[in-house]
Amino acid sequence: MSETQNIKTQRAGGILIITIDRPEARNAFDLATAQQMQVAMDMLDADDSLFVGVITGASDTFCAGADLKALARGERPATLERGGFGMFRKPSIKPLIAAVEGYAVGGGLELCLSCDLIVAASSAKLGLPEVRNGSVAIGGGLFRLPRRMPHHLAMELALTGDIREAAYFHQHGVVNQLSFPGHALQDAVALGQRLVQNSPLALAASKAVVQAANEQTEAALWEGQRALVAKAFQSEDRQEGLRAFAEKRKPIWRGR
Image (cartoon, rainbow, N blue to C red; front, side, top):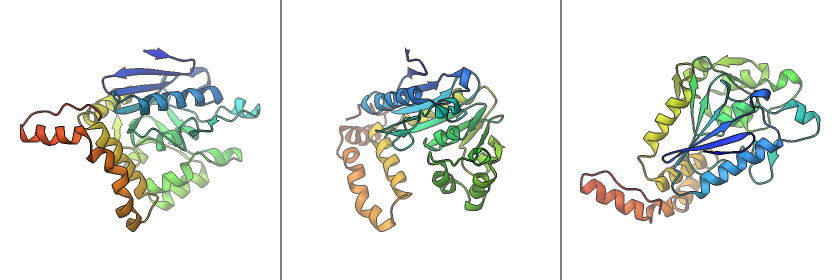
């Protein structure tokens, strides 16, 4: 296990477990934490032996958003390269799973929405309460949330600042899987293990195309997806996958 002050990383096979560890601030982000999250994202992107990232929080809570004390000092929890919390604008190119216990509010929910899959304990609570404090959620939540649930329900959450239980978000398709309290990380890692059975290049390429689908017209996607999937299609892994299928065995992925 490698450890920094506020972010811990641990390898579990092809999975990188990233733990936010600021229990004294309910895992809220200051500048140092954002910088360390960027380091974790860079590590995940650069290491061919890592296929998937799982983000979780220590001490039975996910993330309470931005550290308001740090904000009051004029400190912004963002990096130039990846944006807010060290990942909002530019998450890892590899699949990310949020494992949520306790509260994921404000930037904590936006952190979840920066991930590709969300596993949440049934006792978890999520929301965008910024308007209650005269603020606005600018970490992507106001445009990512209505892409994942009905427009008027997302608008209600944004305008009321209501915090809802995970079951509400699961019902409306934002949360992929509900877990028993205390089991979100275990279940998120199990989901990650399902993903790592697949080619890492195909995973990253598939993620890129799905993300582009939210941002481009269908006509542009037909043209653009070739560039997004070219590396995966031309890879040794693709040839290995085809051979393994023909030979009725499990493929051996090498990430190249």
